[in-house]
Length: 274
Image: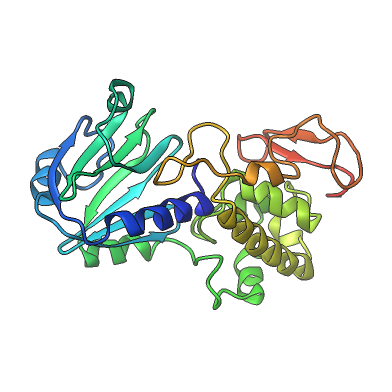
């Protein structure tokens, strides 16, 4: 699933290509990705809109127009892309939302599994939705002390809490796994039993790893590409995620995996993360 670095990379690659452009035509192949808006409403209201900015909040890419905002939550296999040419038949097959811009380029939301979400919201509606999300982990005001206070009261596994979008946004399976390894924390340990100094160290590793992943334009294993179709390269820098059974790059111990924490695979080193 695209996490904070992937969505941030999508936003950064789209911004110079679509800001200032006007939407001249739009089509939607499936409406099961819509939340809070009908197909008819969305297509009618997209026509003639000028794109003013592209930003990110949590795992959402926000395409701000002169009236409302298209909030795209890619889900497992979604991607927001710009094409300077017509789509091929295979590309059209998975193009859920297809917008023609005034310079002839195409803004496309592609979703193979169609489990992402599109919202068409005004400022008030988005503010209400956003208020239910946790703080941004790379916000300078989100200090290690605040991070530690938000996580330390939960009795759930620290990895599960770290991935809770109400506690802190943007951290999913990949980066939670990597940050916990870097901090030397057992991912199954209840959050309230992790010493405060380790939680604060975890904060530093979350920020460091997310920033490094953004610099590498995200992690690509299957579907993820940025707004121009370019894959990320952070998968080359992963220490534990996706490496079950391989030797730990720190101590050489064979990496183990469990699905007992959050029903998703968690790779860890039992020696480094005691």
